[in-house]
View (tube, rainbow, N blue to C red):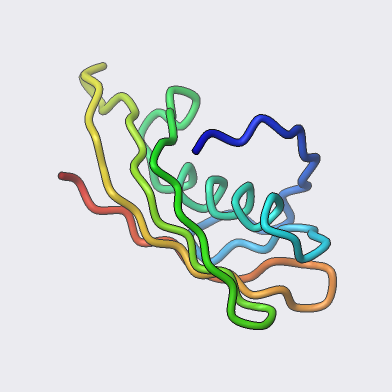
Length: 101
């Protein structure tokens, strides 16, 4: 399911274990995970997310889905990802694992 809501999220620390300002809802968890996935892509501006599924366990959200993006040669490639984020105070912390198909 594509998320059409506009959510403003400030990146505090980059990388796969980044932290993002958040209010703990599903929409911001999805945005935080997409940011963590983009951090691992060669051309993050080309990322197209699909098939996102999320689940919550307390303050922890798990998100999985598919992302298509360009590689170094400009060829679109599909990858599956799994992301787990937990709200710590006002920030998301966690990690995303991205695996090419």
